[in-house]
Length: 160
Image 1 (cartoon, rainbow, N blue to C red):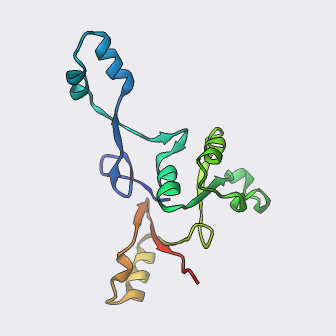
Image 2 (image 1 turned 180 degrees about the vertical axis):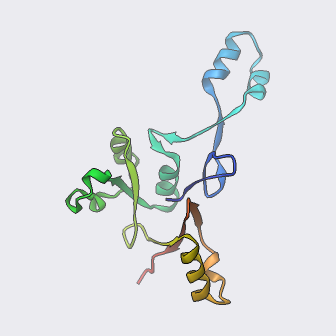
Image 3 (image 1 turned 60 degrees about the horizontal axis):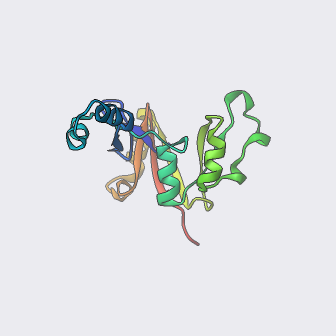
C-alpha cells in the first residue's frame, strides 16, 4: 500500500524512517552500571514496525488521515463473501483485534476513507500515464509510493 522501503530496505512511511531506541538494550546497559545518558547515546536505533501489533504504516494512516483498513482475505479465500470492506475501520482497538491473526491489510478506498488510488503497472502504465497527462504535472503533488513494478498514486476523494 503506502508502506514503502527505502534504499536500505528499511520500512518507512512516505519515505520517513520511524526509529526508536531499544528499551531492552538500554536496560541491559543500565544493569551493567553505565550511566543513563551514556547508555542512551550509545544505542543503535531500531525501527518501530508495529503499534499494538498493527503495522506502523496502517496505524499512522488510520490515525493521521482517517483511512480505514480491513484484513484482506488470503488468496485461498478470495471469495467476495469473505471481503470485509464494509467492516473497514480506523479504530485502533478493532485493528489490534484483527492484527492477532497477522493478516495482510487492505485499504478501503472511496468515500469511506476519503481516498482513491491510481495504480500504475510497469513501464507501459507509466508511459500511458505520462502520455495522458502531457505537460500537466499537477498529478505529482500528492502522496506516491512504489512496490515492485507497481506505482501507487493517492488522491483525495471528491467531497460532492
